[in-house]
Amino acid sequence: EPEVTQTPSHQVTQMGQEVILRCVPISNHLYFYWYRQILGQKVEFLVSFYNNEISEKSEIFDDQFSVERPDGSNFTLKIRSTKLEDSAMYFCASRSGTPNTEAFFGQGTRLTVV
Amino acid sequence: GNSVTQMEGPVTLSEEAFLTINCTYTATGYPSLFWYVQYPGEGLQLLLKATKADDKGSNKGFEATYRKETTSFHLEKGSVQVSDSAVYFCALIYPIRGLTFGEGTQLTVNP
Image (cartoon, rainbow over all chains, first blue to last red; front, side, top):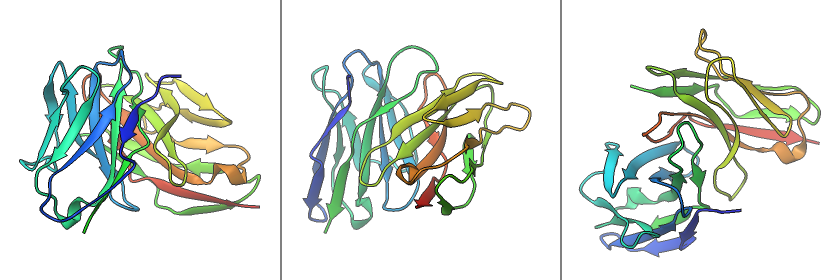
């Protein structure tokens, strides 16, 4: 069964460093998303991406964040200068172009900023 | 804006008890509604969905009915098992936008 894969599963970084979280969505999907979940809290929407551009972003997704689909298979989230409060689980998701279908989630990357 | 509200948790039940986790939503138009489940240390898995009013989603003994008149999508299961222990998230989605999640409800089922 096709699945969304994320790497790495766990990333530890120093405050102020740049990190890139990687995702390979399901191959024929058209919509791509990043969410984050701070430990024990709700799942928060960060950004959606369609047709090679951001279609929607939340207030969390400020200038420190960027997304890219560099080669038609990977979908990356970059945090330019990490802060302690960026520590969270980051989930990538993708959806097909069929209306009202569900999003499929990866297993997540646990980012720890020290 | 769109929002999803779930009943406050955590919920602790004995095995074979009846489960209800309440979910209500605020949205314009007619979003699709979902329940996702997150087992310890894992990602989010779709549990069930409903795409229009009066649809009933069901999977693994869980059910939820899309009620437009009460803007609700409550999750129910007649007899829970220890293996159902997880965090359950109610969510809504519009055709070209991302999912909006509720706060999540931690369910613990004791033997």
